[in-house]
Structures are given as structure tokens and as C-alpha cells.
Length: 281
Image (cartoon, rainbow, N blue to C red; front, side, top):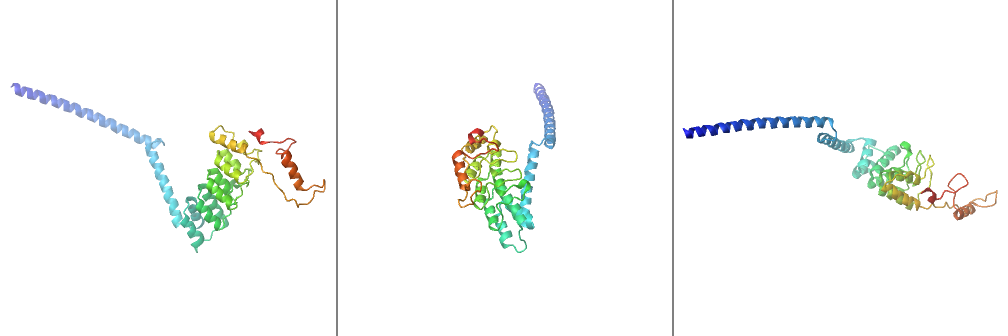
């Protein structure tokens, strides 16, 4: 009896523990289900959560696949634009040099060279220019040239390639801004150094009367580097031919005027004063 009683007591305890464990397990399962449901709801509403991130990555991959598809099976200018944007050298070669069905217009080449400049695709830029694309093309919104586009994105090698192929470092957009202004606004000190080395005018004023130095007033390390480069950039005198016609008013040639300006300083304001670089720092 004692043994059977003990056995039944133990069995009863085991059953009680089992029931208790089952109830706890149900509660944990219900809590986990509620948590999963809450997380799923957050995935739907909160863009920074994992579900939205997966969705964004999926859309990005689909966009890249679509771009590659356009390159392979697209027609005409859209295909060339996309090939220039992603730097598909072989496809550009096929379209420009081997295709018998497509002949690129000046507009197509202009749009493509801007796309390649925006992405820093040096091989594509070289190939487009060899086929007749204009490195000085400004038939874009705001009158940006390929050099300006490369400067905006900080692609120094692409910008130098464009300059080497005839791109104008002093070209002005609709706001009378040059690549120097744009690089200063963006804080691209390496672009400014390259432009100065290529002979770009550092003290040209835009539509609002701002020089490149005026455009980099933000208190960041990048803009501080830009200011250092611009303060040390000396304006180059514009040398004119000595054999030009003599001025009838005082009997001097333009070369005389340049000599006086190089000695006394070249005026940079509309008034009587001079605006030297140190005054703008």
C-alpha cells in the first residue's frame, strides 16, 4: 500500500507538472504569435524595418535587371543612354560602330555623354567622344556641361578626361556658374585642385555675384579644404596679342593695358576698388 500510495502520489505530481508545463507552453506560444503578428504589422508600416528593407533591395535588384534588359533588347537612344549610364563598353561599341539599324543623333550622344559623366564611366566617355559626342554639350536642364556634371558628382578622373578631350573648364550654366562654383558648393576640394591645375578661372562671379569662394562658407572639413585651395588660387592674367590694333584714344595697345594690370592688380569689382583674394577669405 505504501508503495502504491507513493507511486500514485508521484504520478499525481507528474501530471500536475505536465499540465503546468503545457499551460506555460501555450502562453509562450500565444505570446510569440502575438509578437510575430506585431512585427509583421510593423513591417507593413515602418519603412526602416527588415521587411521594408527587403522590399527596397528587391526593387533595387529589379531595377538593375530592368536596366540590363533595356541594354540588351532596347531600341535606339534609350538603349545607348542606359549602356552609357552603366558603362557597358561592349554594348556601346555594338551600337555606335557595328550596328546597321541604329545611327546615333547628336541629341542621343549628348544625353549619353552626360549619363556617363554622372556615373564616372571613363571608358564610355572616351568611346562616345571618339564617335562624335561633344564634351562641351550643354543641351541639358540648367545648361550643365559634362564637365560640370562630373564635377558635381566628384568624378575627378572622368572630368579630367573630358577636359583633355576638349571640355571647357570655364563653361557657364544658365546661372552663370562654372564647374568651380559647383565643386565649391559640394565641398569637392579634389575637383577644385584639378580645375585650378587645368587653368580654370577661380574668381568668376555667377548670376548672384558670388565667386567660388563665396559658395563654400559652410563649416565643414570639406568646405574648409576648398577655401584653402581657392584662397591660394591666383588669377591668371589674360595675355592678348601684341599685334592688335592700337587704341585711337591714347595710342596704346591691349598689351600695354595688360602690363599695367599685371603690375597694379586687376580690378574685380565694378567700382573703383579692388577685390583681392585675401579680402574674400
